[in-house]
Length: 415
Image (cartoon, rainbow, N blue to C red):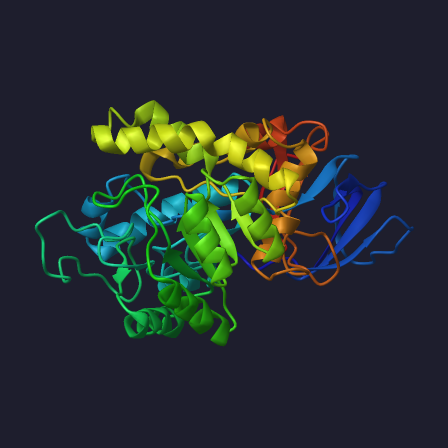
């Protein structure tokens, strides 16, 4: 992949201030190695730096998708779990590369990827976004990540390497939950994924059901915080979301069925919402063709119908809404379409902040990603048009993104 340039300067650039939600005056962005050294509208001498002329275009921080599954090369999660890990990794390398080229310089994997994939990206063996991993999702018996068909009584139906796979770490009781979380921490997790309610794609759990006792949920959050990590929870219903947040969960994934009272609880506890609208749009188009059962399609209809409304409710109550997609298999190409879906409930600036500064705050990475500030990783996009007015340059990233840089390295450029 080549080493990053020692020093670069992007001149005639209009930087997007993600914290304030405004585009600044014509500026120079100075990059030293893999970090931003300065962003200034004042005349600056850049000496021996390589100059890149942005031509007066807007410069955005690299995008962040806070809910991906980079190993999900198939929508059939059971078949995926039975695939050899080497093939899963080979397919993941393509998924990672495509995400980066769509403008996502950082992603939070919501279970499935392990430390080996993370290391492969860090070493430059794979081209892909900076990867924050959860390892195995923590699931109760019969929970959303318990993919065993009815009638299978042994826990050891699936085998996998250190932490690669979407099949859950099945844990029942406070002691087992603590141990399951500690195993993910031991294997390098950056966040802990808990299944706190029913799901669409799982065979045995009701959508509105709650999963794990309050003691189990609290134990999982306590173990995460003990390791200076945090918990993210899959949950749809008001009851499941409320229980998770009151137990210490930092981010609610999906949350399609929330109401105003639930959103107020989330706000009071400082929780984030990570809606994943594009996966429901994709599955609505393709669920029947993929052979989903009538019960699964019924669950899908119920959450898809409420997705945008949940975003509106969260926004109205002041809950930070972060960009996430949750796409599987051949549906990954719809990733940037999430922006269009969100514009039904928020402004372009709010959607941009969800994919930059709000995602960074959720992940406790302020000053590192999601902002064009000195000391941050030099992840940036030079784009055509005005992204504070409309986002077509991001929904069509092949042409709309004119320069894509990650950690000071030019990934691609058509300037």
